[in-house]
Image (cartoon, rainbow over all chains, first blue to last red; front, side):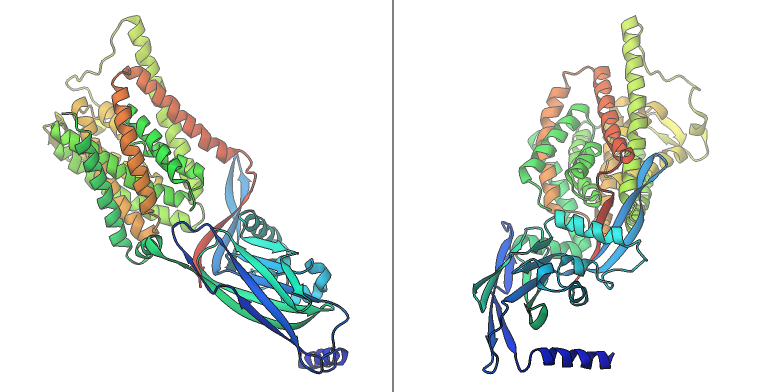
Length: 254
Length: 300
């Protein structure tokens, strides 16, 4: 394993002698507050590519892939199958660490940027992430339809997205991308991975994150429902009884 | 869950109108509607119980004012209902863990609605027929004429209802209603009332008040248990349903006084059969999307 790594390193080093790029990225916002009239938001990613003094300009242009991963969820995907006359949930597949939101933005279609092997190994692109071996338990092909279903259902909800033109270069060395978050994207920490490619290889990588935080009335209600469930239940019951009593007082007919 | 506030209010009012019209809780209509809207069944069932509490409180208060309540019978019903509720909430949580909650709810609705709907339809048609032929069909209580299980041990006297029956069948009925209520998000009035009326021969004037009393108590407990064990109660949604339902029910009740009883029951039977059929189709037809995702827990 180490030998192969060394060989690879030599190979890469041999191909690009003393050339090094650094990637500098920044988000427009690190903390998004969700209040009661929140309808989704946009977060901009800015990036600059710096070459050190020895590095000569490349013949091929740079490519950038921005991967945004939402908070992890334990998801179960179930399949309805026919049992006698009715359709019921039968087979299921668990995805213990599926991101609630997944967005891959790139400057060109991903399959043009790099090879399939590298995409699979480095988990670049939506299909590479969803089909990664560690995404769910491999059941020798039986897991394939479930991966596809997760992808399809999440895409329908606008939570798994891919935009092959999502990253725009303002100059050859400066780019920007806009991450669109729908209102259904859940609160939590969102990781933003920016990967710089040139000529199908990875040159540099940065990782940053932003947070989606619920505020105000709804957040308080949510926290109480979770942590003070008995009090929450009693309060709801009290409201219900009060409303019933008020109605009886208002509409009294005798 | 982004659902339009006005839509929920409107639905609450529409269902409240029907419930006022027929003198029933309306839970059995509202819960399916919420599910069809895309609200998770767990949340729909748990939240709807808050609305049932509110509407039943109104009817119980008016029953108390009219002295149309048998406290002793009510207490027995509540005792059985509470045990049933607890079992129902527990079963609800177990089915949810197993991923079969939706199936359990849908199958129960289909069975319940088809059975109750057909019985009601039969009854109303027969009544209608008798009236056309001139002979009045009346429920009469004759000495020595009742089902054998009413004479089982543990007999009790209910003065207000003019009853002397074994508590075992009453407890069994209330246990079942409590269980079904917690599982399906219904008050169960549309089962309790006919059961008390036709099986136990409780006088009409105390039936509704007593059954509403039982519904308030058991649904209240179911609501709190749902909040604690399943955390599926949505207070805001509940409030919207209550507000919509309260107003709708008043207008429905006013309208209902001009309807004839057997026509009434016939319409209700059609309504039940229609909702049952709608659920049944969902079960039998091939789903357009066989796969579904459920979130077990969020991880940071």
